[in-house]
Each structure stands twice: as structure tokens, then as C-alpha cells.
Image 1 (cartoon, rainbow, N blue to C red):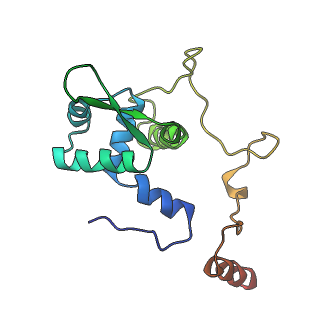
Image 2 (cartoon, rainbow, N blue to C red):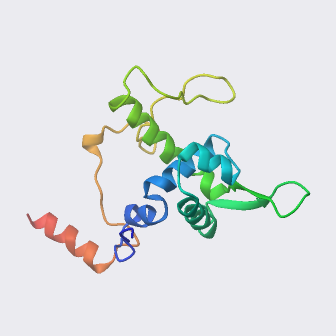
Length: 161
């Protein structure tokens, strides 16, 4: 049974509820590599059928993948990334780049390239409103418009320490 974080007022926690387990991340990796059929997801991830069926249904339920008809015979279907799913390319790329840097330096299993030019994608960086890089040590978290009383109280306590 996975731990749920739905009681937390936090976008990281909410995102982890949707995509935060290993099997789901491997399904997403495969979807970005072009995998569309159940049997191919199973072959490439190594997930048991029941686990894979659960993760695919979860991603479809939350609009990250769409179940689409495939072929004219029978009721075969495939899975395709939706716009919501395609927006996860930044998350997947950030994880891949982190893994390349810290786990596979100089021996990256895959390259991330611009499909238009074939050139490597630059490492993802946080940038300010003018597009200038912001060093990680300068990044700060502050309450946003959806902050609940507990979050606001936490920041008030931090400010008084």
C-alpha cells in the first residue's frame, strides 16, 4: 500500500500522489520513449500485469495518459500521452539529467536531444523572469495564493527564528 499525501497543502506532495512511485515513473519513461501497447510497457518495465494495469489505469484516470483505439480488429487499444502527460517531459528530463550527472557520469544511458537539430538539450536550470540562471542556493520558497493556515503559520514561525 502506497503512502498518500493528500492531506498536505503542497504541490510536491500532490504530484507524488499522482506519479511518485517507481512503476509509474517507469511507465512514463516508456511513454516518452514511444511505447504505447500494454505488452511493450510490460516488456520494457518488467512490471507484473496487475501492477502495470493498475498504473496505466491510474494515469488514464488522472488524464496523464489516454486510452486510444488501435487497429480495426477487436477492441485493442494503446496508451498515449495527453497534453498534461507531455508537460511531464521537464520532470522526466530533470530526473534523467540528475541521474546522468550523479549516477552515470560520462556513461549516460540515453541522450536528451532537440528533435529539430539533434543537438543535446542543455542541463535544465532555474531561471528568473528575465531568463537569467538562479543558483540553487538563491532559491527560496514563500507562501503562495493557495497556502493554507498551517503553511502560513509555518512561515511565520520560520521568520521569528
